Amino acid sequence: MGVDRINEFIHKAEPITAFLGYRLVELSEGRACAELDAGENAQRVGGMLHGGVIMTALDETMGFAALTLNDGDDQVTVELKVNFLEPGVKKPFKICGQVVRRGNRIAVVEGEVRDADGRLIAKALGTWYYLKK
Image (cartoon, rainbow, N blue to C red; front, top):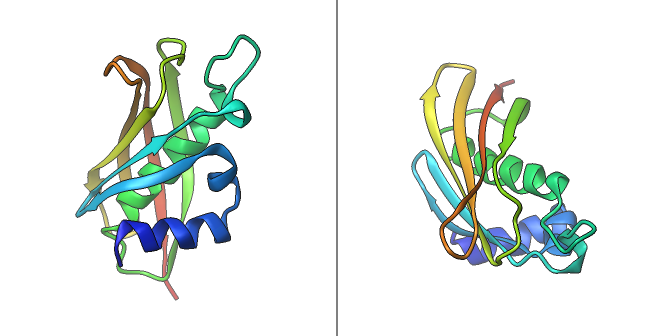
């Protein structure tokens, strides 16, 4: 399934992604990247990208990276730690996630958010649990 069809599905299944202007742009084995337009729905006071939006975009993108290696039925985020490094003001933002280690039931994924100039806005590390019947 191509990223356009995935975006159609995810925008219907998880409407917050459409509301925030999130779209997947790259998906390969153990890796995913997305873009975030960050309109008014994604901003905090002062016109900066909201921290909760950063967390949501990282959770989605890093989860997609984990999903590319998931041979089970589903998956859930176990933990997600984010360091906010710079205010996000120059859009669009690029979010990428890369699987660091995949085990039988868990995947550890790192992620980052960069602004339109390539400046690192946030760095993340998370764990996904693979659900099997």
